[in-house]
Length: 126
Image 1: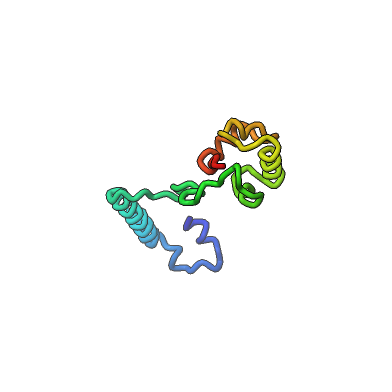
Image 2: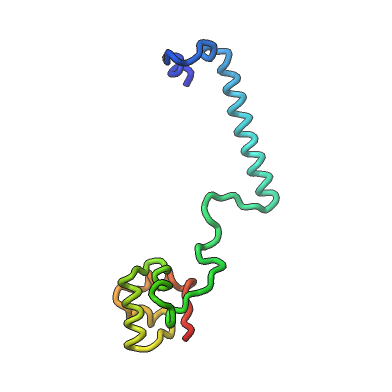
């Protein structure tokens, strides 16, 4: 990297010397060592380090009752837009309440993949 920077006219001359390369090496190695110590310390405490959420988006939220939820609540479910929400409401009005997730598959556009995504987010209360 210093070779590339040494060609830049705006790069300070004293950073072009080879003697500073060891300093950059030491600083980078210290930063990496500090990161490793932090990660190992967190793991020893039982803390899980992750940039991804560990809880599902619906954790702590009440389940949505598929048999009584209005349009706006149904649209909060993943994979359910206004068209599918209207289809759910029409199906339950015409054929009665849904008993389980297999009943939900009678709605046009909802298959086993969608019901699998919804199973932890909905209830079949009447």
